[in-house]
Amino acid sequence: MGRKERIAKAATRTASQVRENAARERGRRKRTSSASGVPSHRHCSVCWAPIPLNAEPPVCSDEECEKTHEKRNASRKRLTIMLYLFPAIAILIALLTSI
Ligand SMILES: [Zn+2]
Image (cartoon, rainbow, N blue to C red; front, side, top):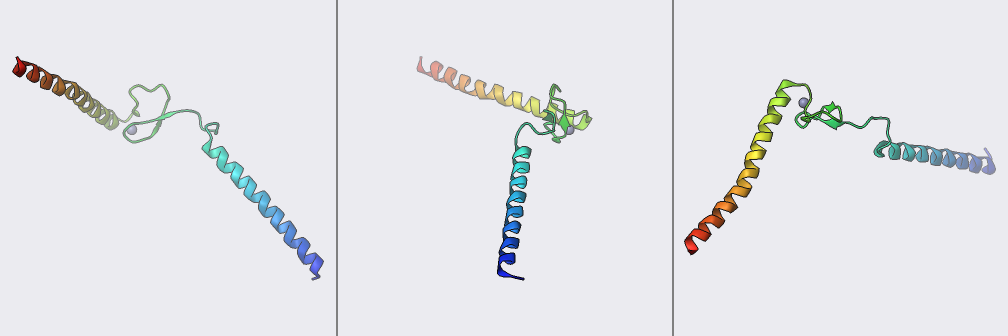
């Protein structure tokens, strides 16, 4: 194998490598972009199974997931109420004691 031949071979190898890398890079970018082949959807808030975008409540058809979601919702609501109720009570007590 001559020197010239070896250089030519190395050049083509590098060129094909670059092409391959570019193709891989394109593929990665495509996957991360929102314009992928997957239609827009949301996930079950319990088991993360894909469900329709307009599913309300955001859980799958599994009864167990529905129950868990209901429980979580109730506890969240309770927490929100307490978040407002406790400062209100504290202010009320402060007002009452200052009179
Ligand atoms: Zn689920």
